[in-house]
Length: 172
Image (cartoon, rainbow, N blue to C red):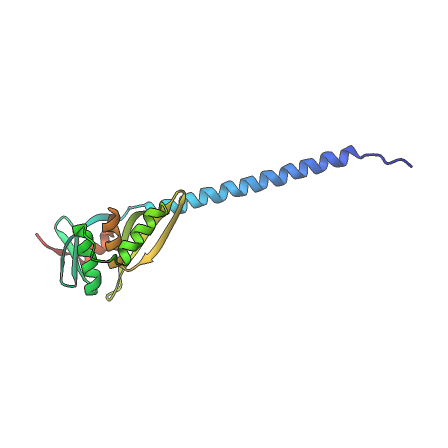
């Protein structure tokens, strides 16, 4: 008996195949949308205020906004690195912050922001928000390291406004 081609079956397979492709495309689109919303969360500055490094004195760093500032202590090496960032200077040899800033530049990674998130009575907590093209990464970082890196990359430093109000001291 000669072989007969079943056209109805091929048509059904094609329809099922198109449905699979549509569902895969829909899932990929949903993932991209969710990733976009996640990135917006990192970039949101709602509840944060921009701060500046006002002074480094010994191992103390004073950061603030207007007349409210926080005084935090760090290691002498980190304080020195922050001062070098303020001055736009580099020591005889590059330190870790200088090297990391150079790596970021070479790989086209930008430091979008530093965000001080909290304080537990002993430690301050911060995130650095990095971007490379469409990819966004938020990393937990020691605030002193984050500040030193932000100064080298001319990035904005933010602090949680509630944290600044609770812990900050009036300086003027």
